[in-house]
Length: 350
Image 1 (cartoon, one colour):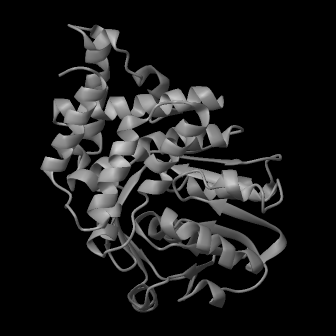
Image 2 (cartoon, one colour):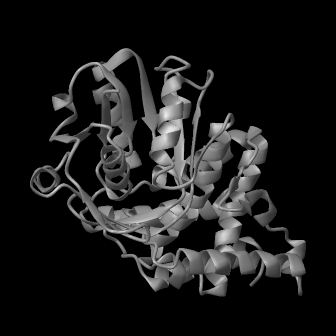
């Protein structure tokens, strides 16, 4: 199985290391020279909640996608969304006739990719464990979670069983016949964890200690849940959470509501479990690059317009992150407070 991993960031480093560690040769497109040199000289280094180790065998790094070998059986794309479409276009002519393209990036690029690839060629994946890039080809796994894979169309293939076994060495891995529903559910997570991090510069734990931020989290989720309902998406249970139950109602925000108290408690638990989670988009901001916000909250704004669902908070986040990208403001608690105030205004809680 001739396999390439494109994107050696926080998660990609862990994915590639575990393929190689379990005897599957991996070709990697590193994009950056320090990453290439680190792999050649030291290997892929993993630390964190699942143990510390270095993997050097079975890894064949190159700098660019164009240097990858021909006739790949499997290409795993796990880049930032801002690079993913370009990476897929560049690796497309490296694929064998019956190859599988596995998209591990966040967002829902698969909606567009269905127009370019054979129905049985696209394999999608969501990852709910967290990791932080420590340095070139070095990743710290900061929390555990789960992995879900599935074909966009078509039946499960022989290669899928191999992937289930390999990925299960990282975290419990399951198969879904409704992977786009799972992807949309994961999108709702990212529109909160990533965007709130871009706005504030804070860890998830720090943010969710604030009652106002927990309310804003739930309100942003509610906009996404309404879009899912309009699109006919059946939200899936991830990390033991049923996301449709987190939708806010105006009634529960008036006075004392046990339902709302329960939702606030769930947010507190999430904040404690993933307390050290930082969004990788903060690295993009520090390096002057575009973030993924247009593919996350921006996607919900676009879908809201298409399905006539109002998304004022997601639009507020997109506009605020664009201001940060342009250098007009910086990630800060003050920006987070602006989002909290906007939430109260949208829900008539002032």
